[in-house]
Image 1: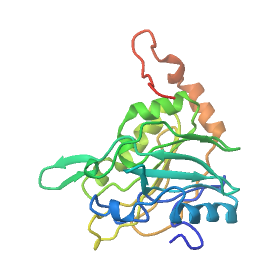
Image 2: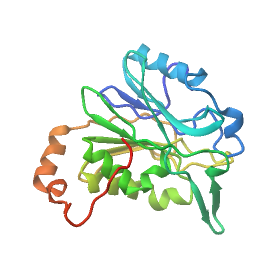
Image 3: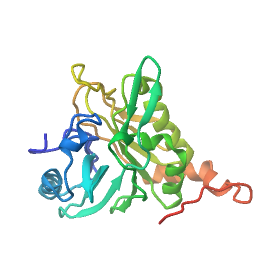
Length: 253
């Protein structure tokens, strides 16, 4: 789906995210076969799409091979087609829900070890991938570093999706008074891994601004920094944190 335009949410501010592991079936047995270098075939096409459309493109993620290791990596491109940053999924999806789903990304993937942000003329953006969204500390660090929008390409499944997909987005948005946007694959009941779907944009008040169904679609939403500022003034939790009692610290830049 990289010919022409990416198949997911678009922001009028000129940012567009793609899907997690969009170049590969989602499964640990597939990642080694579909892994690419960065730059490589998929990221070259992402770069071309960003440049042709003069947008900031958050390139979902692909299995990336680097120095003998595999990562789940999101590459971001600017309107000139240049690579701005790449985020390697920090928290690997290793879960076991009896009778429903068992998955272990760590069988083939290695975790990333860095935070990933980039600046646009519109706002500062922090990146996570899917399971990263469950970890409140990551979002807190991004908010402390001045991010106003957090973007998570993700593929929650039919067990975790209905229970936690929207809940986690709203929680991260309210906890940190930021916008949160997610891009999920459309649901394919015939796939070996069935995604929940429902790409979403949530505002700092926790309100869902727009949400896709289970089919392929394009979402539009405004990122209103004036509203963000007003919410932070009305309920100034970022200023009221008790650094004398607790802290969330980053051990790497």
